[in-house]
Length: 420
Image (tube, helix red, strand yellow):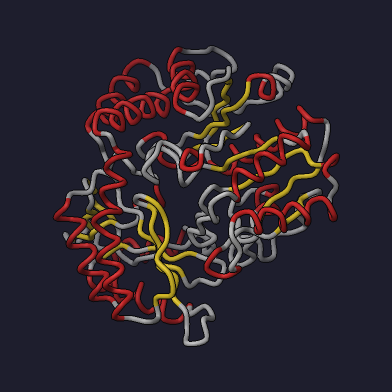
């Protein structure tokens, strides 16, 4: 088997420099809460492929479902010759997502594709153009979703011009703004009404807990207030649940924590056990406003990915992975609290379920990306796969697979402590 060094030399000759990797090791196998590289070194996985392998790598039901589907057929394009698997995934999404109204779904390949189509649908249904997004938001890397994303480097630098009619307002960020949910919502709504105009807003697009932006959990009441305002304004309220969805935060979807019912919800990442699949799900009257042929794509809802999604959802139900996420938080929070007590650089611990974060700050409370990067490097040296995030690069995020064992979780937390 080639070594990581050999593979890196080959990579340097053929892979575009703009595609970067976090660690120099190359993966050979992955299962449970660990990865093993080609040299045989084991890593505790606190990344889960950026919240993708919620059910674990090569989950048994997913493997079997994919094998069965590959043997039957691999692709027809649902727009040409449809198949049951696509329909079955949409049935599951109608049952699982918040709201007891009639729903429709459309399937795609990636989170960015889902967000882009949600915006298309909202604009078509309302006849309006303006889309409201928030500080620190991350929604993807396509041209439209780069405009929706807040952070410039590395996502937007040099790639403009970007799509128009995108308006950014202030996010509720309790650690930094000091506002309660009602105050933060009133401020954001005031910005919308003054700078955009309620009658012009097609959609309000928000992550119930921000992902790449720093695992920012808005103050209680912020999301319900925005959803209520959207309804009154005739705007479509879109929840981007691409990173938060499928049991990650201790509920099937993060919107549920405050009883928020989005008009549209975008999903991807954890939906299919590692295979590429994404969806837009929402109110039937909004989804069906688009003319036939207006939505689609060659690979969207590929039958193999759909089979994997159905097996993943079955696994989430059988293993109660929402409860597993809550267990991760119950185990991790006391350890993180003790760590923060020892290291004043940890300004805040936040998140829900198995989506937890540490924000690192200097003595003045300003972001400390230098220490954050140093802790991450040390973690990698020790064998812990650890991600950072945040607009200022000063947030450490914990995203273990939801099936991680108590022993693996304990080992990972110990390595994190040692990294500090």
